[in-house]
Length: 239
Ligand code: IPE
Ligand code: IPE
Ligand code: MG
Image: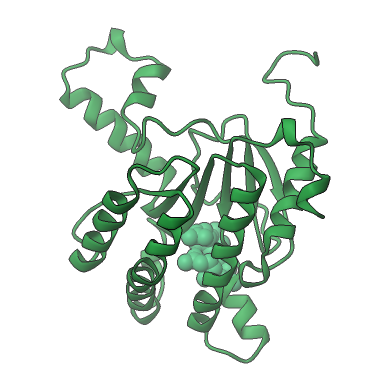
C-alpha cells in the first residue's frame, strides 16, 4: 500500500500500535529474543517517518507493559538498557523532524533512574515540536492508568458526585491525548493486552501478521487504508 493512494482527508488523528512479535521474529532466525528487540528499532523509525508523511498527529507505541516485568530478568534488563540507548541514539533526529516525544506509564522505582533521566531529557528537548506527538508507553498498563487516575482525582478532593468521564480523562497520564482512532497490533495476536483501554473505547482495530521488526510504513499505510474502509458509528447510525 502506498501512502499516496490514501484519502488525505481521512487520515486517523491518533494511531496506537502494539509492537509485538520481536521474540518470535528472532527465534525464527535462530537469533536471541533480544536481537528481535534490537531489530525493532528500524521498524519504529520507519513507522514514525510514515506517520509524518501521512500527516498522522499522534502515534502511541507500546514499548513495555506493567505485565512485562514477568519476563526473565535478563530480558527485562536488556529492554531497560535498550530503550535508554534508543533515546540517546534517536532523539536528535526525531527532534529535527518535528516530533514531540512523550511517555505514559508508571514512573516508579522499578524503572532505572538513568532511563527516567533520558526520558525527561527527551521530553524537554522536543517539547515545542508539533508535527507529530510520539508517545512511548513504558511501564504502562491501561488498568494501572485508570487506577492511578482515580487515585489522583480522589487525592485532589473530588466528591463522588463530581466524577464523570471528563474528570477521569483529566487525570489520565496525558490528559491532552486524543481518543485512539486506529489501533494496530502486529504478529498475528488478536488481543488488547491492557493497551490504552480507556482511550480505545471506539478505536478501529487492525491486526497484521508481520512481526514488529518487519513492520514498515507500507504496513502502516495498509492499516490506514483498512481504517478508511470502515464505517465508524459510535453507537449511532451511518451518516
Ligand atoms: C514485543 O515483542 C516487545 C515487548 C513486549 C517488549 P515480544 O517480546 O512480545 O515478542 P513475542 O511476542 O514474544 O514474539
Ligand atoms: C504487549 O505485548 C506489550 C508490548 C508490546 C510492549 P506482550 O507480548 O507483552 O503481550 P501478551 O503477553 O502476548 O499478551
Ligand atoms: Mg509478545
